[in-house]
Length: 232
Ligand SMILES: CC(C)c1onc(-c2c(Cl)cccc2Cl)c1COc1ccc(-c2ccc3[nH]c(C(=O)O)cc3c2)cc1
Image (tube, rainbow, N blue to C red; front, side, top):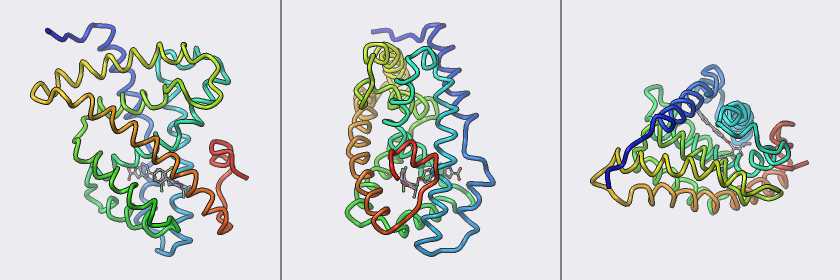
């Protein structure tokens, strides 16, 4: 059928992509990936700094999602806490997709591999990164997929799931149209994107175990990460 993006959808798309590209980890923080030493402790500290900065960026981005701020305040918090890890997997995956000129990609991979994460989590984590890179998503798709992840209605403690579902459905419809228009020769592409969201949930469960093992080895997190991940 003739798929068309309406004027409202184009406006919605612009708001989301502008917010997504505006709110990025500051370059001086990202550059630290290249400068500091390489030891398991140093890598952990750097990744903690990246994650903390990424959460701040994520909160600012989320506030720009049309409709998000009109949700119940406690539900806004529940959505952020429930989606932070998944949104950060998507965001850090973009570093691997961009093949950074300055070698940040290799450095980020190296630091993640050597930060006290056990091999049983490293394997699915980098399989996920590879699967995201192979999709060659454009920025509109990355921004919408992150938005759809944040607006997942069945996160723990969300009271008004219908209200979240209504906004998420708007984003899903927009992403569906974009995929059809962007990749007419790949009718399954939209389904493949949504399949990544399922994989993200699995990674989110692994992540809870990663946190436990870091804490067992007496690794400290920042106050913001403790709050968003309910640790300490
Ligand atoms: C608290 C730390 C140790 C942590 O715990 N889990 C994870 C963790 C892990 Cl490994 C994997 C996935 C998710 C989490 Cl949430 C992390 C580290 O998390 C991040 C690491 C890097 C980045 C990130 C995001 C965007 C970036 N852009 C650039 C740039 O150069 O432009 C660098 C960069 C880094 C974000 C989170």
